[in-house]
Every structure is written in structure tokens, then in C-alpha cells.
Length: 106
Image (cartoon, rainbow, N blue to C red):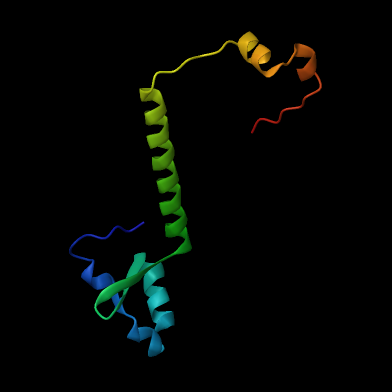
């Protein structure tokens, strides 16, 4: 994904009036080529356009960062561990209860 820096951010700005002038296809082509466009209305950012691939990559990175933060939080907290027998007793299960259960591991 192309990232924006202070130099090329100005090139990414598109006035919303361009859409009214029939330039939507041109703008979408620019998004495919360069990765991102910032649509401005009354000189203020209104929305950001990006390709579906870049959006998916961004969402994947966000999800990974969220999971990493959660795992670091959990690792920093004191943990108590239960043995298999303790869990079975706590849940009122016996080994016989587990015999007919099928588990699919991906």
C-alpha cells in the first residue's frame, strides 16, 4: 500500500466538485494507480478513497495490531492456571462426557 507523506499528500487531494464534473472514472483510475485519494469539500477532508485491496490490507493490519495489544495486556497481568482435572471438576464434566465430541482443528 502506498503511504502518504507530507510531500505527496497534496497530490492526493481531489475536490468533490470533480465528481460533479464527470471525472469519477479518472479519480478511480488514479486510486488504482497511486493507492489513495483524499476528497475535500469546502477545503476540508470529506472522505478517503482507496482500493479494496488496500482497504483489506489496512483492516488486516488493524486487526493484527489490536490482537497484539490484547495479547500484551493479557501477558502483563498475573495469571492463574487450572489443571485439566480442575477444569473438568469446575464444569461438572467427566472423561466419558468428552468421548463422543468431534473437534475440527483448522
